[in-house]
Image (cartoon, rainbow, N blue to C red; front, side):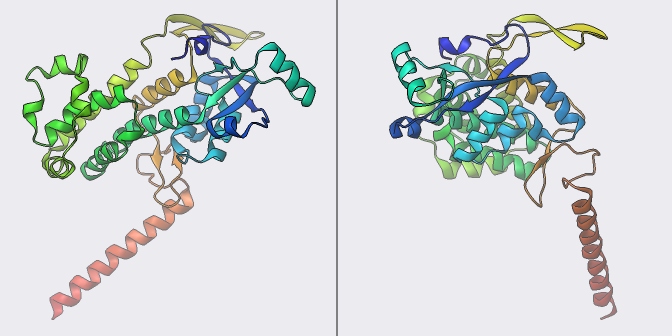
Length: 327
């Protein structure tokens, strides 16, 4: 984490700032970073509550981050305008002389920060890949695919994150000789050399298909727990205020908010504890919070159509079985 990014806008609370995109005439800068000015403050916790009340995870930072199309700059800009950057990197480029020159040429607010495009998408990929394990929890085939997705996209992961994942991937590949017997110690201090060792992809796939779902879930839980702990270890307990001051104000003990990236993982962890987590609509691919356990599609109309299609499929199957029996 960048030391300058540790500066919180309202320490101890749950407020973060949206971002305004600054127009920069430096083409090279636009290819690697996006210059920002600070927008309006908002309550991160309120977005989470609103998302669940509306059954729409896209109203909270973690849901919108999960739904972004990897590498799409328009999606990145939408996220910045809606929730701000995952970290505020205060821009050293804008010293006083440079800022004054910018202000002379433009009538906009002076850029104060930036987001590094490659870093943002690396974090988005990390969150999406880990969240994929949770989304596939109930289906062994989907859970296997989620692990395969981790391997195929390992180049997008931070090296430390990939190192933590490697022991299980090696184990599934049948390469137990590379994994020490004391696996608990390996998880606390994973060997970087394991991550640098080429993975036999065909052996990995073959081994993965043989794993019972209980082991797939066991290691998925370890990976998710690692990420949640990693992104909360620098947070300190703090009292945050809630409610309307003119009616009633109350306080809750929570962890202070240094970055939106920390809040994304906290909201993800909170979602896992709820009876129904988000689902991905098979029709349109949209993330949504189902109102009931049997809701698979994001709208009641699509759910009704799916039910009719399933009834028709079963009816045709019954008719086909009866026709065979008559023959």
